[in-house]
Amino acid sequence: MKNLLKKSLIPTEIIWEKKTFSQLNTDELYDLLKLRIDIFVVEQSCFYPDLDDHDRHPQTQHLFCYQDGVMTAYLRILPKGLTYPDNISIGRVVTASCARGIGLGHELMRVGLVECLKFFPNDTVKISAQEHLEKYYNQHGFERVSEMYLEDDIPHIGMLKIH
Image (cartoon, rainbow, N blue to C red; front, top):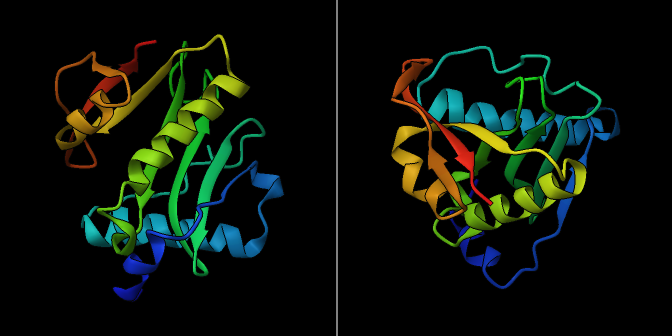
């Protein structure tokens, strides 16, 4: 992705799309998997199986946006019982390297939390966050609820969204 993309993001309106697995077309599926692999596997040097069958669950919501033909942000919303028995979850939160530093990650999380309330209004959101992103998630109402643990050799913490 070109560095020029970053400049073009600022004035461009962001259109968010939310789909279940069965609603994704093949290009969208390819793009979201590529983005996740580019960042989580390649950039973070974390070799793990990204495909965990949670993407296919009929209640999982995939939230993403495109800018200039490039998927630049993505997250998935998982229903209660899939990751945590008593909580819904947001996971695979990612912004493309070409789209960082302009607030897109914060907008992604804001829109994701709005979608959580729409689809799961009575459920609390719990996440497994990379420890170095604790302050980022604090800005969105999450509080730490666990000690640090390793997930795929990366320090993580459990966090709950406090309403």
